[in-house]
Image (cartoon, rainbow, N blue to C red):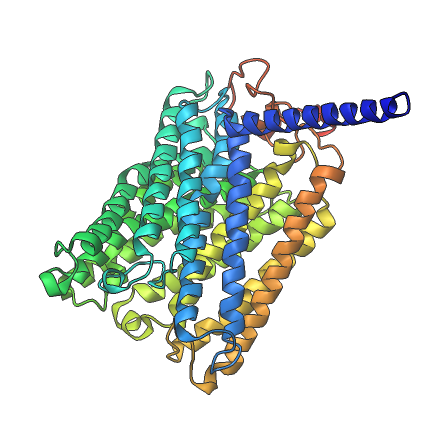
Length: 552
């Protein structure tokens, strides 16, 4: 008995230790799963959309590798259709639309407003779980037969195919509600929870951009929800809305889809504009040139974006008068966008520029977005668009505006606010290398696609004529360089959580309210309610002590 006693004691102690560790892990899990803290919800979004970016990137890499040879390398045609559809759905609906509002918006907006949290914290948590549920349904659709309609789900094919369109449509419906609830939350928060003295024209431009985005989310996203529900009803009950065999009109689906999806372009890109506006000012040490013009241009873009959906349908048979109007409005929406670009360049001019990683991503954005915007003007011209429609020129333009610009702004924002979020600094050396790889790889990927498209190479084809093989191979090599850069960036950021040096309270010398909060911020963000008495981006008020004191 005495011999076994110590062994029994050790076993009991080990059991108690395991039980204690399990309870601690369980408590930690539920403290995150049920949190109402906007910062934790923002971090959960950041993890989720980052995984979606990596998944979408893997699908993109598979597409590019398949196209290495003109006859195709990896898949049959049907599988290829599913792979590029998954790439589009993951990138557009699961990553790009929620990425900046969900992660950085949740993390930074209340801090910039001097608020303790968002106005509706329970609705905020529900928005995250709706996003997660929609993502799970999209994943379920992969194993439930897949889907190959493209990310646009065009009728009548989406009605006739026997694949899991209803499942992924329901997932997008839930993702839409997540977007609507997030927008409602940000509108109420901006109106009701601003710090004393924080008037509308003292708000940072990131707040203006998120506010304009929220308006679009609330007004435009219900159209997407209705559209995917109508597709589901058409498939299940054959009611004849889009099905031409039953008297329906497939072009009506295009009107519904693009009436949402063109404002959705600005749901994606307006938050990116807000990030760039803030970072340009901070890292150039200058007040923004044309602050009010940039603020009003965000609202103008939000309004005009509802009027230009028809430029996606120049080849659909609509009237010449409608096409003329949509072409004019396409050029017209470029005016407030150009105001932003010129204001950013004017802010950088003769500024005290710090070439750190957030600023390098910001400058990369200015170049990439300029290319995307100028090629958009080309596609807005009726006679040119007829030739370039459904070619790789459109693919390249779309990626310059949507993926290149928005992802670069997202990466810039993550690097800029990472010290505030986690209280640690990443390696600037590896961050700059990652930025260079992503920028060079992106241009190497999509410039050949502009050339292919101008020569008539159609998009979405699994095989192609041999004369385009060299362009596709150059594009594939560029995609591999992008993947290397993204992997290096993610590894650097994740590693910094464990090994990074402590960040300063105000790492970059910003003057907006989030830098007055401790690093990382406490539960209610500020120990005392901040009061705003100065104009926005006034660097004469910068307290240098906050840029020199490591966080505790």
